[in-house]
Amino acid sequence: MIEYTNTDICKMLYLCNYLGDSNSESCELCDSCMHIDNNFEIDENNKTKIKDFQDNFFPILEVKNKTTNLINGVASSYYGFSNVGKVIHKCKYENGGDYPIFLLKQILRAYGKTFKEQKFDLITFVPPTKSGKLVENFATKIASTLKLPISPLIKIRETKEQKIFQNKALKTENIQDAFDIDVNIIGKSILLIDDIFDSGATIKEIGRMLTKKEAKVIAPLVIAKTVGGDI
Image 1 (cartoon, helix red, strand yellow):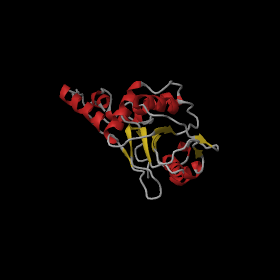
Image 2: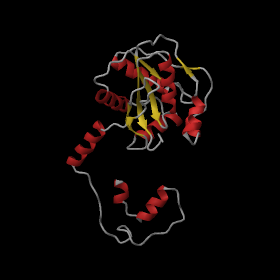
Image 3: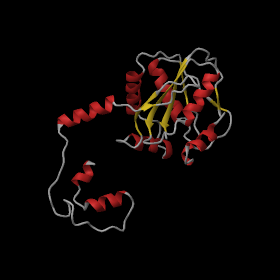
Image 4: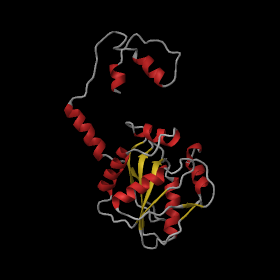
């Protein structure tokens, strides 16, 4: 937004180029076309407010229902906001390596603010479809920091990437009865780690399975929540 505000090129062209439309012409009406100086700078007070917002606003994952022992979880950010989405995409799809330490610190802040009254017995994580050990390595670092044991979920049948499906029903069908766990979780409170929360279908399916195995509490903790993905 700051780059858009401060650009010297036509605002209409800037937006069209950003959206991939290369056929537009200058509007001749915006401040850039009319050579009006409209630079914007963030002062230290606003920088402090932005940091405070980033450190304290964490999207809630509304997954609690009457048929499972899932409780509402939390994401450390929105996917696509600031640079979080770009970092996730680079690590996940562009061989960018493990998720960096700043994402670990951010998700631990979200954990501390949301679950400070909740005690957990075990950490587990959503098995990958194509992203290798990204989530596993991230969950292992969380478990080490929180000093909690970690046990992987098992994928008992092949699934496709959830992002290829256009609606929640297809996503639910894709992962139905796809997961299991081979440790005793009766009466245990479980922290469930993933990187992206979209429709919530995967979290809810895992919650259903863990409830069936008599887990007491299942709480999702993810790096980022997509905007409008849980409808």
